[in-house]
Length: 245
Length: 260
Ligand code: HEM
Ligand code: SF4
Ligand code: FES
Image (cartoon, rainbow over all chains, first blue to last red; front, side, top):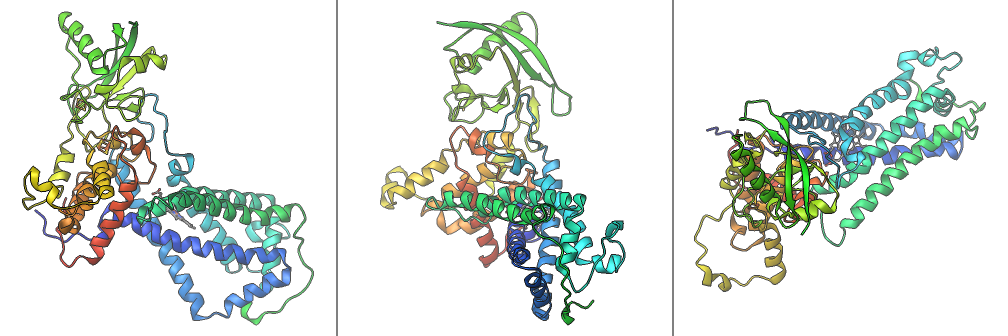
């Protein structure tokens, strides 16, 4: 007999709760991220001013970054643990002859694909627009002829990237994957934390569908608008000391 | 009375370590009033008279209350009819669907080791139940039941959970082979009633620890269990168990032992 005390994080329900909480932190970040990005439709200046403003937050920015990083790591670690466990449990969504799904949907069945897919997408995204300046300097980004960063002009860095078809394609696939992940994830999260009440259970589905669609379409609108010529690069020059690397 | 001939593909496996395979049988003169198990009984009689080994399957009450008769029929745990155990499934329901071929398999989950053919060992459920699915003091005899007034809605809700017969269809149909629906029904049924409330913190923690120790998968909220459950246990019980478990882990003053 073991005499260790049961701890929350060693249990399946505990790990799932960590995934839900870290998922919510990431969702809140993603909502903020989208509302910032949409400033591109206002004007290149509004977009760049917003980018510069974020840098003025100082310690607050670091707290937010730390919270997102910790959430990300916790989320991925718990996902890996549970995945491992489910494989050992003899699981499988079609382990019987002629089995058809009855209640579940493709979003739910693909969580362990959309999740790891997001992992790769996020690494690409960070290498592109977060650490891109450190990786490529003023040289060609991802080796694309004529696409170079201007550290004072995040707006151009983004839309010049989206004019490259394969970069846009990767972004569109990535955020569509995010939508799929959240279509199930947002609903699942309510179940995980035990937020259920007969009066409001219908709303949980509505919120998951609405928010996942809104986020996916919102993010997709930017590369699509760029490719259609709606967000041309600007010739204006900017100077924001906060954006200096 | 309608009778038909069906082609059955039945999973045959000698024991937990053997490798099984489907074997094909003709089931002749299957009549619409037979239950699914009676059809198998009839086939077994014929196999025995031909000197072949009969198909092993688990069964007991044959009235949908003991939970023994689980098997997967054409991909459906307990067959295609909603809220119906295999023993209560009549062949007319199978005829209605126009099936001429029927694939019959045991529950598949590591925590339910196969005994033989269609029969699995569900004692993992018993151990979860032993970990906390009881009240440790005497709550009186039958006539004392009415001395603790319980609101009708609460009694009804507890009864909804208590109808779980421990059949294991939830595990069998779950893409993750999770036992969350069963465990949540057992946790919820007692946790809802005044007699069960004093032990609810310790109950949920011990039962969840045992559920994990048995090697069941973890819930990702597919809802397949609810669709397969012959008693219509709702996944709302899983949400309640999750809430109760996390609350107990965070706020209970004492610890419970880990289980492996
Ligand atoms: C980066 C790699 C990621 C991986 C590997 C991953 C993986 C997973 C997996 C396997 C699940 C469990 C699915 C289930 O239980 O149904 C899940 C749930 C979830 N994920 Fe992710 N995910 C990732 C990123 C994200 C991101 C970026 C967000 C939010 C913006 C997010 C939000 C959620 C939410 C809200 C849930 C539901 C939690 C719950 O069911 O309790 N995930 N994730
Ligand atoms: S919850 Fe339903 S499917 Fe699961 S063991 Fe109980 S009665 Fe069977
Ligand atoms: S034999 Fe008892 S429920 Fe089917």
